[in-house]
Length: 210
Image (cartoon, rainbow, N blue to C red; front, top):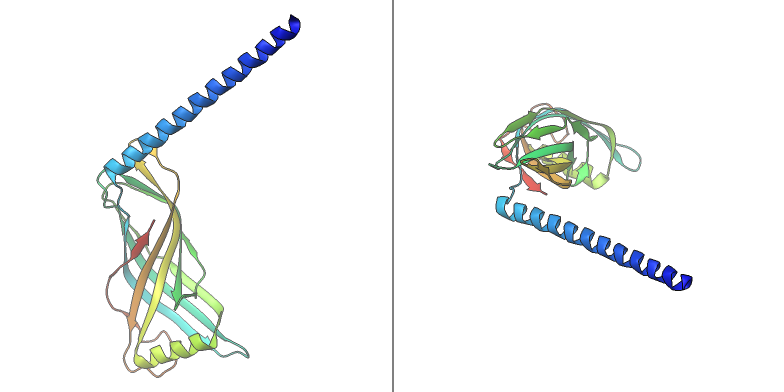
């Protein structure tokens, strides 16, 4: 008899565990459904980014044995606006750097974390520097040709993590990637890279991926 009682106790424990697991699964499903409904109803729009200015302070290219070395200093002014009426945005991490033809040419600078409310605008003006960055020969040739033509197109890129806020509900983290073209023009180029004479053309709209 005692053996049967032991088996009944194990069966009760298994049934209790199955009930608890079922309850947890139902709760998780309800939370997921509620989150999906909130997302579908509110439809959060990507934050909008604009490159307002780019001031080239240094652009020095020196030849090496197997590759060239590029030193760059660029001060930028980038603005972000939250276009949502009911959704706030937490910018938990924002790293910004410059690239030329898909090669990173400056060290990533960290922008301060910020919360952006409905319709709010935030502006940052970091200095991006890249001392002695190894540069492939074909990129060095392309850079000289651009300078000879009197224009230079750099890419300002932002890599970060954001969260959405609706009322008291805050989402998990999402990856944010922003690309801003920086059009710089000069007159009377001499074929050699240099910061002198390059001017930022116009405010540009950035491509945003979340």
